[in-house]
Structures are given as C-alpha cells and as structure tokens.
Image 1 (cartoon, rainbow, N blue to C red):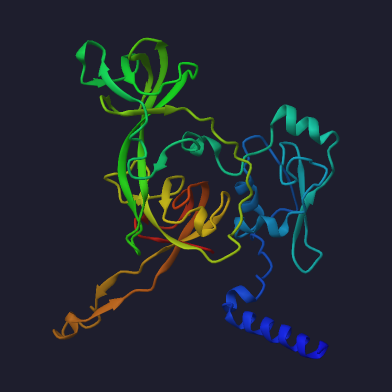
Image 2 (image 1 turned 180 degrees about the vertical axis):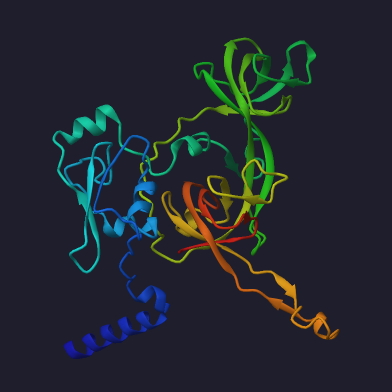
Length: 352
C-alpha cells in the first residue's frame, strides 16, 4: 500500500511538472552583471533602488536575486540609505550584493529620519499615487457635485468659489475634483475594465453653508458644474522592490495618462496596463514591453510587379521595461523606465 501511494504521488508530480511550460519549470539563469558593474558603490542622496540596480545588473528587476537583505533593518530589509556602501561579491556561482558594514540603531534611522532611497524617481510618480481614480460605470454618480460657480461663471479655476451639494463632511478639509473619463477596454477580450476619472484640481471647504461653499485651491484643467468631488487621499509611500512577477502575466498598454490625443510614450512617462490585482500583478512588478512588428510591402525586387503585392510581417521587438507602481483590480499604472523606440497603445506588457 505504501509503495502504491508513493507511486501515485510521484506520478501526480510528474504530470503537474509536464503541464508547466519549460520556461517556468526551469529555474531562471543567474542574474547577469552590467559590463561596468563596480566592486563597491557608495549610495548618495537622490539615488533610487532602480538606478543602483542598473549600475550592477543588466536587468535591474533581478535585484532581489542578488541582494543580501540586511535583517537588522526591522521594517524593511531592502531599505538602503545615503552613505551606505554596497559591495559586489563575485566569488560564488552567482553574484551577491551586500552592505559593507551594518549600521547601528537601524530602527531610529528608518522610523524617525525616513531617509531610505525610493524605488523609482518619486517626483515623477508622486502626483499619480493617489490619482487618477479608476471607477466602475457610474462610480462617481453618488459623489458630491459642483452645482454652481461664483457669479454665474461657467468654468472655475484656482481661487474661485464653488458650491457643492451631496454628502460633504465639513471635517474633511481637502477634496479632489474629478470628471468621469474614457472607458478602459481590454483590446483582446473587449471587457470594460473601468473608467479613468480625470483629475481636475483640488478644493478646500470655505464655509459650512447650504450648499457647501468651497474654494478651488488648485486647477489642472477647467472645472465646471457637474464635476464630482471626493476626499483627498494621502499618497502611499514608495518602498517596494523592483522584481519580475512570479507567474506569467501578459497585458497591453491601453492608454497613456493625460494623453487623449497622444498615442506614444517614452521613458519616464506613465501608461495604463490592462492587467491588475486579479491577474496577480503587484506594486513593484516589472514588465517587458514588446512592440508589434508591422506588416510591410516586399520591395526586394522593384522590377517584379507581382512581387510588389507581397507583404512581410516583421518580427516583434522587445522595446523596454515598465515599473508597476499603482494597482487596481483590473488595470494598473506603470512608469516606463526604458524605451528604445516610442511605446504605443496596443504594445504588449508581459513578464520579462
């Protein structure tokens, strides 16, 4: 009986292994060092984890494979601070990177000073950590709305008064103003993934009147009657580690933020990807961007008229990397870290 059970278990394991694609069943090869990888590097103010990883590795998202976490740093063993000295150890089968020395009193440094370097350039993504919103159809329908402007104005800008009806908590001082935007559609399944609510500006409660009087404190776009307000949320800290997803994930670039008339993006621009938490995508995941090869006319023989009607499909090309920093259920926002050619709507974003 024992042998029979063991045989069943082994057979089951072999069947599962056979069903796994070869690329997943095999372990990833060791991370490759950059050609100019230093033996030592001293972290300076303004560094990012991505930038440091790029100094040492050809693929910065392989950082978790080479970093020896400093377990003395209680909150996050991946945190690195200006002044830290990183040492590259090439002696083993795969490279390792570690701190040259262990700093004393790590809790004081992480909790009180908050000087740990960011994963990616925080100044670029900070405005997008709490906006835009992705909502279901009618997701803003019950939010308080602007019903009138001061002196009958049609549009409002910074400094103007707005009058708001709805469930406004006067104890909340800061509010964000949104307008329902374009539908986010999966180009493959045609599923409606939600609506991107366009951020218009900010407002503060001026007086507890009926309707509530608010003053526009900032305006990015024209603000009008019918626009909705929601409490301003605090931006989340950027403390995640760049890494590849554990499983295969493949989506597409479905929009370029604030780019209603723009179909291309480059490095340090923000794109929307048609995959989210339900697909296993997490903050800190890095996806490879692939551009479809176009179909072009065969011009190899300009004297053969029949050949001119032939077409050739050029191969798809890996174009760059996108760092996912904000995840909703069905979609995510990512920062394009590298792009050899412009990133276009419809490009594939998948596990590298």
